[in-house]
Amino acid sequence: MSTKTESNKVSAPIEDRAQLIEYFAKGEKPKDRWRIGTEHEKFVFATRDFHAPAYDEQGGIRDLLGELTQFGWKPVLEGGNVIALSGPDGTVSLEPAGQLELSGAPLENLHETCGETGRHLEQVKQVGDKLGLNFLGLGMWPDKTRAELPIMPKGRYGIMLRHMPRVGNLGLDMMLRTCTIQVNLDYASEADMAQKFRVGLALQPLATALFANSPFTEGRPNGYLSYRSHIWSDTDPARTGMLPFVFEEGFGYERYAEYALDVPMYFVYRDGKYIDAAGQSFRDFLKGELPAYPGHKPTMDDWADHLSTAFPEVRLKTFLEMRGADGGRWGRICALPALWVGLLYDQGALDAAWDLVKGWSMEGREALRSSVPKLALDAPLPGGGKLKDIAGEVLDIAAAGLNARAQLNASGDNESGFLDPLREVVRTGKVPAQVLLDRFNGDWQGDIRRVYEEARF
Image 1 (cartoon, rainbow, N blue to C red):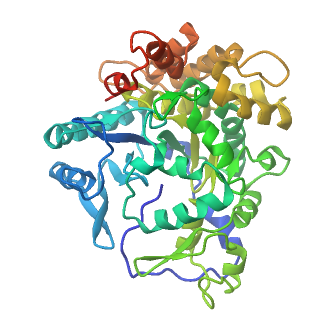
Image 2: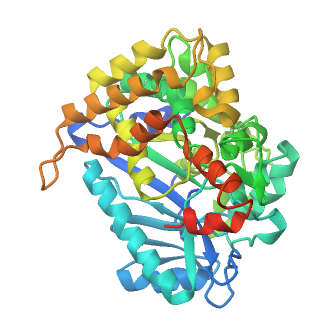
């Protein structure tokens, strides 16, 4: 989630609703300036007893952030607490229960992306060895109850923790017990954004299936392959989902802005503090009638903050975010951007992907999204068949897109090799969660602690 820095600077109030739409248009970039931004979260655990460390315990999360500064990271403060780090590789930040996230820098190719990931993981493992910490690449805490997890000292999280139970049953699990991998990608125009958004939404269930990696809850199989994905179905219907309007004729920046205006607010950030506006309307804010902050109008910074509080399967800011994948280890962190860069950054691949899904009905897309958390690649496709029937074809399209980009490393390899972990899933027919379940029911003999060795970085 987004990290705010302490500042007394407030930008000018929004004077015209057209500014909300222009915000998206300002994200347009020519193809030679398209970049790749990868975000990945991991669970932190103490090696001595597998507990999730608190922020302020000895050897805990605060100490972890402090030790990372030796690599050139600069502290980001909120309320006097270090709650993030900034540096040339992006931002290191904290999710609500101490999940550690790298929001990577915008990079030109996947070789750079995977190198950035490797640097980050080497740094955290070096610090972890010193502090007695390690890191787990899964989509869901495999054994922790909500009550066993700490809360990080970030103002927006307090607001969200209070609000989530009012609008869904699993929102607290989303905040406290899940991890994800995401990739942020650029667009050239409104039409380019719309095509990428549609392909991203339609094929997001495939990403969810290929990366499904959250089969355990509180030490036992939970009946799902991506329980993290299931959690989003009962978090907050006003800010989640498959956004049917994206597939309607005429979809563009204005329609997404109208959607975002209907997403209830969480907060207003002023003078280093969060004002609780949970459930209130940004439309009222535009009129200066926000109950939590009467007589004040929003700024563009407020609009940017508000956009970060919508959680659909694909999200628009000044770039597009692909949001469907469970957390995983290094190879999967590199594989997710490879999938989406291959599909979306070459026009031939993008057109081929759209041809594959454009005939799907909205009902069929929703049914696919609903069934994937349990069934993964066995989820039913719109019009017949199963998701696994097109998985190899989609990877072939992505590989063709990466081949066309011809981004080579020093050894002369292009980017398509980063798809190999996904090709292995298609070859075996088993997503990561199914491999873990086989081991849980086999040589682990039901001992969930074995996952800490299996899924650590």
